[in-house]
Image 1 (cartoon, rainbow, N blue to C red):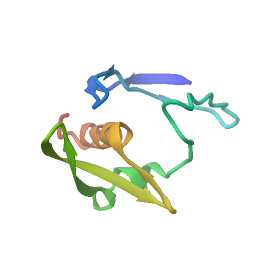
Image 2 (image 1 turned 180 degrees about the horizontal axis):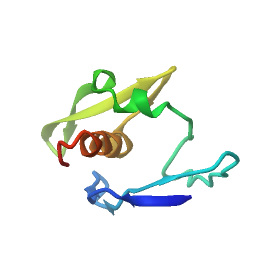
Image 3 (image 1 turned 180 degrees about the vertical axis):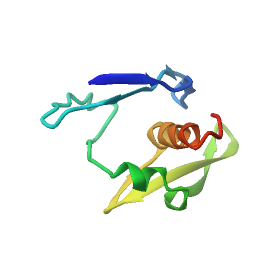
Image 4 (image 1 turned 60 degrees about the vertical axis):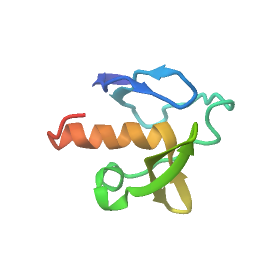
Length: 99
């Protein structure tokens, strides 16, 4: 991976603080998934991910409070949770909207 930079830290529901790294990978890049964290990996065009029309708001009950999160459905799969949040943050940054 060729690093480009980092997004702001994200605090996730599990209590972890995650610092997302942004970078470019070359064809043939091999992922090693932590199956306790991720079910699978798949590719989605960046233009699709960054299109706010593809961000579906969802109310979730967390610790007795309702919060609004977003999902990004694509080709029968759904990007949700911390991953969706990080990608939406990336889109905001690229559009110059701030975090």
